[in-house]
Image (cartoon, rainbow, N blue to C red):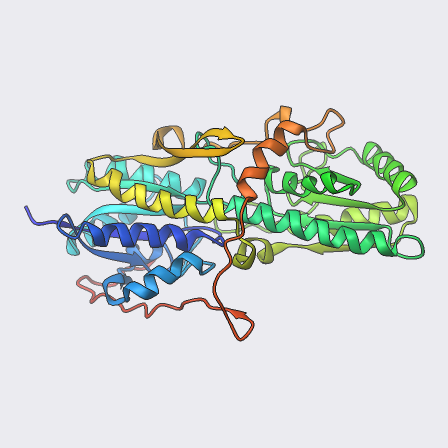
Length: 417
């Protein structure tokens, strides 16, 4: 039997290190060219498979592929596109199998978060039923850190480092001005349902910064919150607030909800920081500044953690190795062996236990007053932000790579999404 080709795609919101996983997949596949033929990447994620818009990674030099390890965002383009069930949209699955057949693809590596884990699981379960078995391996990625079973998710360590450092630096600024000017700084971070990124901002407490955190796991209590902020300002002269975009009122409505939804049906968020800042202004009268970290937090490759880059690459590498061992419908994971010194190894999880499951902040990581993080949380977070994996610089700017993106010749008729 002839060796099969591989399909790799990136999904959802990209990260500072998702390309390191791509590097791990492609470099490892090239080392096993006796078993894996070409590696085709989907242009703009799974959409690239559905529209037969494939990128031939064999046309990229070894040097450029290696540069992916320190290049942020998604080198092949990503998308927010969730496949429905086979019963709801059979034609999409039939199209995927048709494309895989046409290009002799037997390995499917999907690099993303919870929704892509679900897609990967569906493909693994349904491809064989449709007469064309495909080994589907999910490569974990999400800044939200909300995939189950794995200790942490590639992308989170770097965004956590960026938020911790940025919160610290901005807090120093506020502290220096607090006597006669700004007393409140509010930073809004990503995290729809899980407060892992917001928790990272709480590490500034170890630098004597008064900080109040608003987690999506905790219903927002306005009276309790204002009292906490008031106490911090009276004691320290200023206060920093880290608010997750998913912070919500007791009725479940997000503070940041705009009334619109994305292609996955998720509420479009963005705007919790000014809501919180104005609540403080109206109740306590303090001058404030606020910021929304937005894309900056997940694109900041210049401040990635060493542990995050290493794990992102290792999981991409492991995905290929597991596929070659005959595994299917699984996700390689990070297994923490020790926090001090930090030691970890690669494990694996069945996709049936990963798809559509979110890992929230454990309550033992949140202080009793619900506005801070515990020592146990700090012990979890610090190893994930360890080390500075700086990209190379030239003329004061980081050196990133843009791939050729050579298209694979199409063999099928066009397909309308």
